[in-house]
Length: 436
Image 1 (cartoon, rainbow, N blue to C red):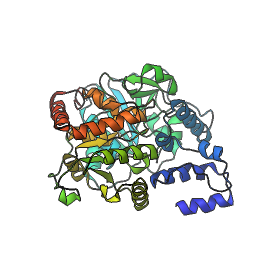
Image 2: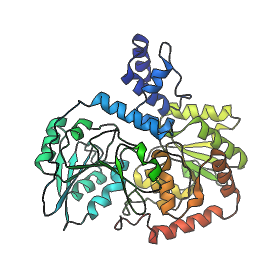
Image 3: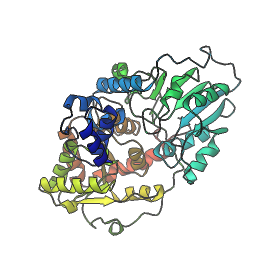
Image 4: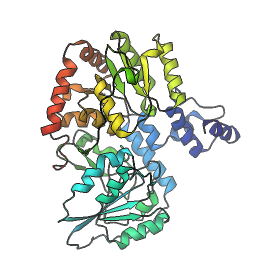
């Protein structure tokens, strides 16, 4: 795909949609610097063509994220679409909540929200699912489908027809679990099929879409002084914005040897998608390995290009590339079990861990994060705040590096944090899904 995009840009260098994908594919390969403009491409046009999703790994500027999201929405959505839902709403005995997504399958969005769908109070709410997700045959997909009172597939409908169908069902509150991510149906939302429209979880940023009224957040995730950087008005949850599934399955814990890890020494891990990695944070990781003898960094093997580039970067920084251990993708229960073998999760910045941070904390693995100004840069900090572990939130790259070294070299430090998380899992607010 990268080769095809380069050939296309050689023919016509001003294609913003091609540049939009070219940037993200470089980030996915850890080809740094990402903004290395190909011949004939205006460097400013390259930056201006960044997608809302790719930008989350490249910038912590919430105003730039808002401008990018709005610009994309303006380019993609027709102006002045008629509003389908009545402004005054409906008068239903039970409030009709509609969730819409292309990720009702084995996807992080479903893995977080499935118990939320199951626990809605059926005496007060009627729950609809509007779905254009692939049928992957997974147990997770079946569980999500079963959680809806009304499951409605809209795969074959146009966006306008989908919007009109939602309107016919008189949905009171429509919750978009997508934002500007792959598979989004932005125009369906722009028809305003419900009187209240909310975005949640799918895109950790503003949508920039005037048709979305609210975003579900907490006061760490979107402090009130940052709320002006969002096109949506925040709805603040009292503890934490992110919901959890307490029924997630965990396989038997594997051995270090079976995972290619050394028998002794500190195991740092970061199982985030590789496009979240940046040269600045990777350099800090290499410094951490240098300062903690016999330590390794356990990463997701996202794709062979990223793996080769990360090994090359490690060697260029003077470290043995063998100190990077790569884990292949696995079924959720096997992936969860791996967290029992690591000592500390090193978060990415400016695009923090979301579902992976939740999974790590659920398994009792401490997460060290670096927090910034944007939604994506505050996700793990929001979870740690709810977990009562503010000491694992840093705000400066040097402090982040020093804290990782301190935790790894202080006897019992990570074990103490594990014990705190085990108690939190049982009685704290972070994983109290019924309360959420």
